[in-house]
Image (cartoon, rainbow, N blue to C red; front, top):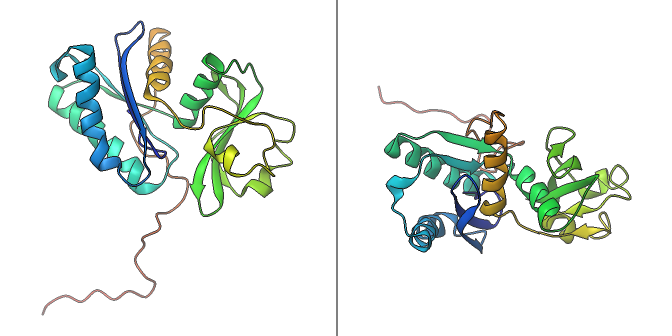
Amino acid sequence: MDTATPAVTVALHDGASVIASSGQVDARRHGELLLPAVDRVLAEAGVKLDAVTGVVVGVGPGPYTGLRVGLVTAATFGSALSVPVHGICTLDGLAYAAGQDGGLEGPFAVATDARRKEVYWARYEDARTRTGDPAVDRPADIAAELAGLPVVGAGAALYPDAFPDARGPEHVSAASLASLAAERLAAGQELLEPQPLYLRRPDAQVPKNYKVVTPK
């Protein structure tokens, strides 16, 4: 599952292929849409929740509130089912989809909307190989660095002046995330801890010079 972008996306993978998936784009309803999506995917696959043997969740980067919905839900499922919970970079899922579905061979970049007129982004040598850590920047500040490269994701579509060669998909799919995770696990690679990749502080912060009042 992934809720790091406006897409609320869930998929079920049997180790060989995706057997059911769901995706809805709504930046304001992650908490409302995620669990019904899980129910739909399980129903489509004809299995119960207790058949799940592991959980993979997108760790972002992404805005604080939406990202937390997926991570907390994944942790809850992991605890309730006593199964491992793995993290995977959301940008990696987009890059993998661009290679599998969009035919991009690389090099290229991925950019998602970070709000505040910024993007979360990373460069890729190919659909499976990220060449650096994810970052958050204003599009104009990285336009020269990414000049000549295709840029995948909603962040590219939002800023065509900075990213003239915008490519799809715009949003991550749990199907691609699950397929990439299954491929890495089968190869014996370790996935990330299911911890949020924020890259910046949340919008809501304690005001400076805040005084704590305690009863005497």
